[in-house]
Image (cartoon, rainbow, N blue to C red; front, side, top):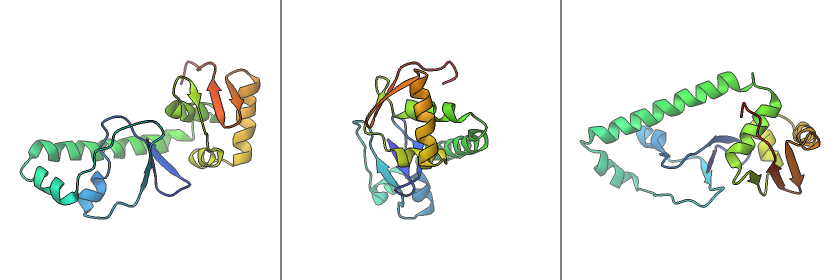
Length: 153
């Protein structure tokens, strides 16, 4: 599952049992992001009023919200600070790893991928061709097969 701030920028990839909407809950604001499931999943939605009743007097739930917010803040800062120091090929393969199932990514959206990587669509396709030519991946239309993962991925 991915979280997008707009239809063009991917903010993060979610993991199983991850909490969504905690910042909006804490700030009492409406949710202003889109969530798209890339793989089959189950999402549990709780109305704000019901959640407020659940959390009232529940220190463990408050602590969970605090840990979730601070974890996302730390993860985002680490990502921002280290992201552009990594080689582009590594960043592309990390992106593919997040989306892959059985070393295969179907229905890849190159423009979204380029936006997430902060590069042009043209540059992305050039690097993907290089990875294809060197046998790291194999492209077939909008499907990418990862043939071998480098040790650092």
